[in-house]
Length: 166
Image 1 (cartoon, helix red, strand yellow):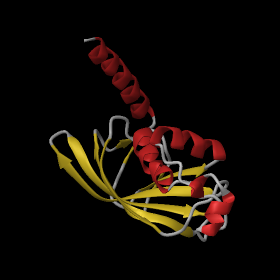
Image 2: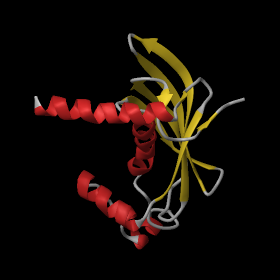
Image 3: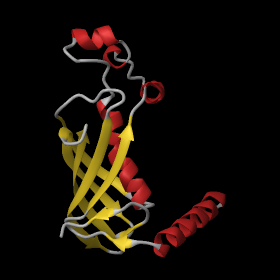
Image 4: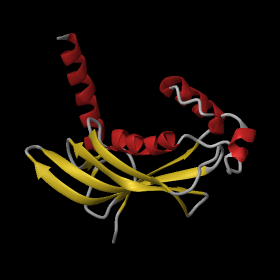
């Protein structure tokens, strides 16, 4: 009962926020988020996932494996898609994700995650959205490519700038 009350208060405040300055997502629209991963990010991620592969924490191990330096965990990089969904569509449910890791991501690189809507289908009072999901490093180098499917409570975008495909 208490959980239900807290959730309704939380959701109401998010709806209020999103309705003040929202726009509606359309096919072809892109949502982006930029991030630079630090050593601390890798340490915190490893604490949660128990992924302590030496290529993430030891330069020599990374170089022996054929990389320039220590790698950011691929799944940590892909978490940027969840960040985009949750910050733009409060209450969204991440249904599936396919990923293809194209290039290594190193600590300190500027990573731009981009999700571009290519299918939007209304189901009852929600939307099934399919997005291309890509991460670029250092401007235009494709580091990660894939597809994300999510259930959105509405097409109203709460926070980010939407890049329209016009």
